Length: 497
Image 1 (cartoon, rainbow, N blue to C red):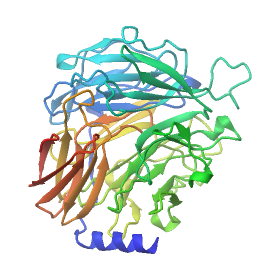
Image 2 (image 1 turned 135 degrees about the vertical axis):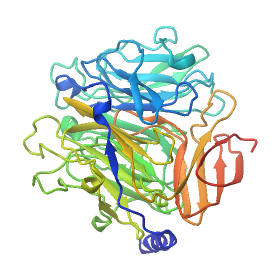
Image 3 (image 1 turned 90 degrees about the vertical axis):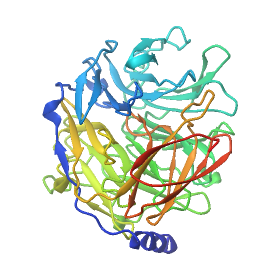
């Protein structure tokens, strides 16, 4: 661990410290939208961010719970207006991905009730193809989702996480539902159970610390009570990992997953949000994980403004370089489940800024994003194309929020848009490494993670004062591309480059 901290310190030493992050609150410019509902919408409240018309201005789709979903067209300069969209209630979240390989993003809609699959069309038009594509109409409570492409597959494999089994008369405690795998067939998909299920609230398919594709499942012990734990499922071997594999069982009130290589060693660290401690797992050279030291500043156990001595409740988590200094920062959406008296009722969001020595410090109040509503889903994304990561937050029983990144003196940046021919048009599963004066930074192209919502956008990389980069892409089929580039631009890459 000491060597890893030394590497972090040396990388950070080459990058100057930038200004305190600042966000401009533009929430009042949005149509009023609230994620609402009873206990089936205590969880969920995700948001999907994706460009559905090719204008490089990402759209926003917000879950509504018992209210209809809200689709926001991006008109540029942080102006959003409600656009036409199928009327869907009961939605807990949504993930964008190209399901049919036509190069246009589709949507998987998570619901309390039968999920829906929407095929994307020209100019952000969506068609419900749930029946036509052979998806089951099961009455589950879906709260987690991820996807990956097997070698040579014409469609992705989907993992779908279900929460409490609403049909179990003995529930809700110790009544977790079974999760599902959707296996692509010549026509449509075939459903297989993925069990045991421990009330999944987030899933992410990505390379683990061993370098192998693995499905990580984060589970809510509030309902499995005992006998359950976080899960790791080896995709190639089709089995759950055990302590004998070096995967130690961890039990927590799992809410969300965020993954990012924080030290440039080619292995992603993993953040697991929870009630109380937010657990950051540091990838080790032997392929295992170790809990981050408390001094790293990532546990975010209590409300950071001192307003309440009870534990915080973390939901969506996302790494992103807010000030473009070459170091990934961390946003965590916080909020009480509803009126749970054991935890902080008014629980401000976290913005943890990574320092040169690899530690994180709280800057949510100074940045202007420490609201105390019951936050659920969120997204750090460049919504106005200026190279800064903006922020959207979905709240339970309170209006959604929108923030423009106006941090002064941000560093340079580059955004990498990976495209390839064939079924996996967005190169899900690719691993990207960016080398610059700011150090070595790695990211994976994934679908999933967060809490009930995700993005399909170019990978954003902050660069500090660096003005040149060397980009290495390991494509899903194993081919490798190497590209040199300038900065402050969106660069589209394909395997032949």
